[in-house]
Amino acid sequence: MADSVPISDTKLVSHAKRGCESSFRCLFERYYPVIHAYAWKICGDSTSADDIAQQTFIKVASKLSAYQQKDKFQAWLYRIALNTARDHLRATSRYRKRLENFESPQSQSPPEWEKYEQLADSLKKLSSDLQETVLLVFAQGLTQKEAAQVLQCPEGTIAWRISEARKILKRPPPTNS
Image 1 (tube, rainbow, N blue to C red):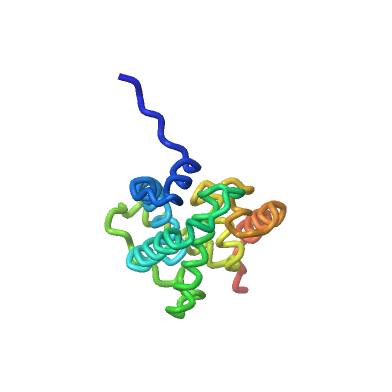
Image 2 (cartoon, one colour; image 1 turned 90 degrees about the horizontal axis):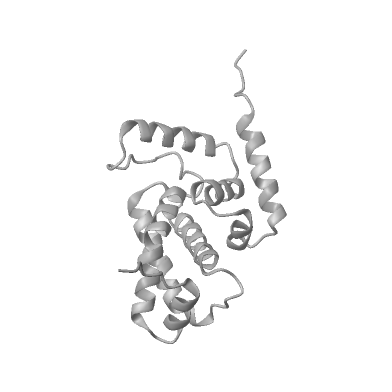
């Protein structure tokens, strides 16, 4: 029996725009876990990540007819998720405090949690623009070009932000003398 070839995002989007519910369901099933994980990395808690991911797909469903396929669907989806997360964090007055009160996910073992806590502590040193860039490129695995599409800025800005983040994270902590 031959392996089935997955349907491209382009075809699924095209069919979904014409009202095909099964195509939208395929997009949802393909991207919901990824968007949920991304939302969790931004806000730091599972409940907010659920809300953000669900709201993202509600927005996708309502805006799909206006989607222009000049950008990759995935980049468009991440942009909606990022804007939804920003709105959510502003609405809950936690935008600046989001990395301070992480809850340990029940599914992670302690060594993995320790690594995550170290990452969260490191990210606190960065501005929100640098944090968003680092999360997209390193945590989500997007290319710099894709991250530029999500953040709606030039690819050179993404490269600069990554360089700045590396410089900041390599600095030794201040000594108390």
